[in-house]
Length: 88
Image (cartoon, rainbow, N blue to C red; front, side, top):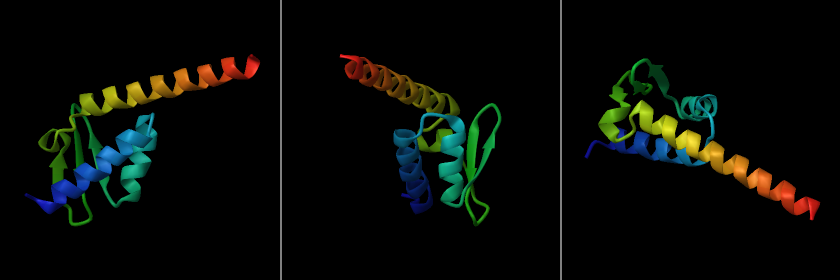
């Protein structure tokens, strides 16, 4: 398998598991040395100017957006639960 794609996939998994918004994900991926092109879909360009579409590695723009939305919902629910517990 293409090592470049595997590395990017690992970074994306890490970003998706730790981010709740697109700007957070963008900052995380950028810190790993990638540029992001976002249009109808999403693509990542490494420091050697190699472009990989998100859909080529199983992360379409829609899938990324859905996962970030789930994370945000989870985080908000957790905060709400914590606040309720503090009031008890």
